[in-house]
Image (cartoon, rainbow, N blue to C red):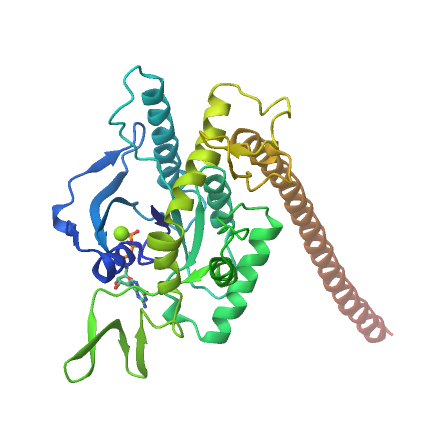
Length: 368
Ligand SMILES: Nc1nc2c(ncn2[C@@H]2O[C@H](COP(=O)(O)OP(=O)(O)OP(=O)(O)O)[C@@H](O)[C@H]2O)c(=O)[nH]1
Ligand SMILES: [Mg+2]
């Protein structure tokens, strides 16, 4: 799934990813499959695609969401996205409870790319709020959109700032597993983690570099930025994570962590009593597959329900304090203004008094 503010190149990115790696996919004009959220009138585009590599065929669903505006009052534009994710968990859970469990329809979101506007500053409060909600539900992968608009040094600073905010706000982004048997894979994971948030460039066009030789990129008067050049952006790393090296981990961790969290909340499960939280997850053969990635922290923190309530409370208090401060400042300003006005009046009165006194003196002199 891709989501983020409007006009950040989400649709372009999907097309770039397809054109650079997929054998067959439905073009934009053939997309029919729209999901309309129960409450809001927001269309979520679902594109089906088939990836074929070395005789393996993988069916993919790519979910394009409409971008939200950049003011704070646009709750309506992103809640349907959260609803969509929850609805898919819910629907899968219901199917699991049916006697016949074959042919389950599974539209659970395994990876959610969150597009960040390349401002060069930092994450916005709206980004933080949405990312928090997403991170308790899906494997969240932050990406810097249109990274060709930042210079390499601006990009580095921007990445560091974003990483700092993610850390400070305790946003649980997807981390490729490091404890792997194969050292090369572990090294690859490390490189992926270091590159986050991935800087991406999207382009549906191929540019001719030398006669007859084309590369996917964006042409500028000062030069060419290449989508698949690792010196220019992290597109290749991200593509590899999504479609090759970490595809399975994304699917497994969605099922073992995000879906289980959803299910235990729905069933009023073990979360609230604080037990069973650090249990390792095992497969049918009893082998340990993966420890929940948050096992060092109490699970409650990552329980979307509690987290949201806590966040809402915090937000409420911050807003109250802010409003009080604002009121106090306004009051202070008013007093200062009033004092200035009175001082001015006083000065005027004194000048008037002076003129009157002068006039009296003049009159007295004239009388003598
Ligand atoms: N400079 C630059 N422009 C880009 C890039 N990717 C997309 N664009 C341009 O940005 C504009 C918006 O792209 P879209 O893909 O439609 O953006 P979107 O996020 O799908 O927008 P919404 O569907 O409205 O949310 C288009 O003119 C693209 O050509 C990029 O990597 N760099
Ligand atoms: Mg779009």
